[in-house]
Image (cartoon, rainbow, N blue to C red; front, side):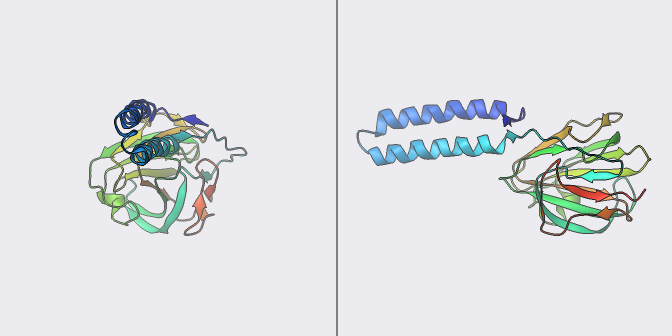
Length: 222
């Protein structure tokens, strides 16, 4: 297990802050109130461990990929499986599959399939809870469209949540992408939407826990 590059700067700064707070608590409070000093030191390092866990970056390799497979782009829980009009780029009805990530999930995002990035945009917006339906169109978000080798377009959207304040997307138009490659990171509680063709064979169910770059979300018919 390694630390994601998006968290290294934050963790280094936080480590220094926690170390200083712990030292001050020990020097200034321990003789007068040992319990208070111990509580402050313990809580400070618990905060650091929380952030350390949040920015974990597990190495995952999806084996046996076949054309037409759609693999989970993120860890989390499936909160939406329904037909939806995608209005930003595709301009047609698609099956929307949404994965909600809590602060305890891995927050790296992977490409869900093999293909070429044909569209990328970032939109500023609100920071409503990411599990609400309106978050898909009203929250801050990044949208990436991947064209598979058989010319099917798959739209993936990273959505900020109530706590998420930064979406990182590595995608750029023209990039040849594939599974096992990370396409971004969302900091602190968020959601990822997939918009699939209406005839896609969806393999997951509502409330199912999925693992990024491991769980098969769907299989395209063609």
